[in-house]
Image (cartoon, helix red, strand yellow):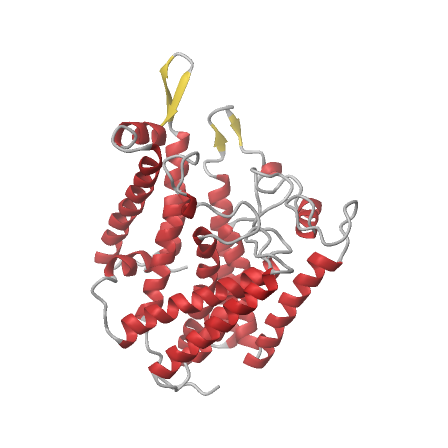
Length: 382
């Protein structure tokens, strides 16, 4: 596909990224996990709720950004070797930040023990971003669009076949239950002791389910190709909506036999969420880059300009608020988060609204911090 020489910056992509990361901070930080509005809960297993869109949307954005960043680096004269080194460097940093977030603060203040390396969770959100970025960026760099489309289709069909046609030892065929599906079996076999502490026998960012997650990022790359084409903006946005509808409908049909599921990242989930990502981006693109309605975008540009930074630092702060604790009366311990929540939120709101108010406060707190970064032009690039 021929592309013009000049690469135009997509404000809509920055806003989309900012909305996504703000949503991630909101969903990850309720006042208490025991009282959450249903639309802010992940699907318990099969299904797709609004929070289940956040991670695939971010991987989709990573894909779009790959096409723009790689093209920009090529135009400034970077060699293939320099590009590959940069890809591996960024992937390793993302993976390392994920491990750091999982192991922080390296000491259990409750038991008085140092971190046991044999129990460290290896998979994670940042780790998955690093892995799929590495593979997707290399595919973009070394293969053609036609090859990438073929690989995407192959991975979705392969994952479906593996999950439904390969018998799980001791379980049998076509088992998609949490602890007994093939992805869980492989995770437990290869990462035993290093999985999500909430389950210990499977991981939502596990090994096998990373295959279809790569396709989520590739779908963003495909959009990047289209945006960099020489078509006019209205033609671009019309066809984005067309492909969005096609992907959503295909995902809904596949859901009938291979249910949408974020935890095992099913093929139907990839198509459905990629279609919705296309829809959401197309609306942002039409509003911002075509119609010029930018009066509402500044908070999301602030969030989107340091997306990985705010995700990482907000996660560290949340961890610290749960670690800092003291005894109020003999035998009763309260955390810093609990103290803030019970002092400033529960006295003034109903339980559901207090939990939501805390999450909104946390989003606004990090918006303020990132606004300082933005004003001082501090953009931490990985």
